[in-house]
Image (cartoon, rainbow, N blue to C red; front, top):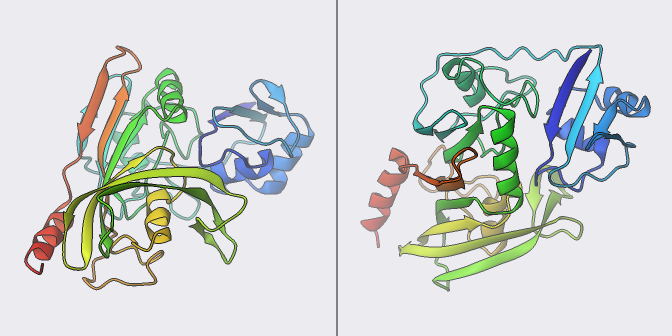
Length: 307
């Protein structure tokens, strides 16, 4: 009998149990297979069997057992990693652009997880299954910067709880279209699936999840603004959606900016700059800073010459 454990976070809270498990496993398990497991009372939420209609909550622990092993062959790969911090509990990686955080069906290699399996010799938290070992949060393929990964289940639960309580310091740097009127502000809205395009998220929905982003202007240019964003919540595509929502989409974000990409860059100007958290073992505050990638720095210098 094989056991699989998952920890629910902000990206899947509010979903039905059957749909949430499909999302967590990136559809590597069929919805019908999940529903059969639930019907047979083999899916547990916080150690209690639940129905398919159960609404998932942030922090729920979901587990199921099955005689059928999940066919997910994730191999370690010797891929260089830019390590910002590492101890026996966690490792913080400065993720480059165009690198996917974890494998998914159809994309099982060349991800950050493949590199971590090699570097950590397989010693990663087992929570969240074989596709996402150690992963407690993720950033988009085209977003660069800090990602924290857990090496054991105890540290995974500790970091997940800090994320749930919004106590982790997550500061992003971004370049956006246009000039923001205020030097700082807060964007608050619901965020949910775009009813016209299910691959996108939208702040113009009536049944989404609460999302809060704080921003501060760092530098102004002729037609663009360099800002810092602080996440209070961590919804899917949150900063990208919120900046587009107020009319200042992120430079290079072709999904939410109407394909506007005047500098022809191959990545959006969004970077997870600072990540601060409490060490699961020592209780000390640890903060890492991920240097801006070269393309981001070069674009800032170019914008400074065309003020």
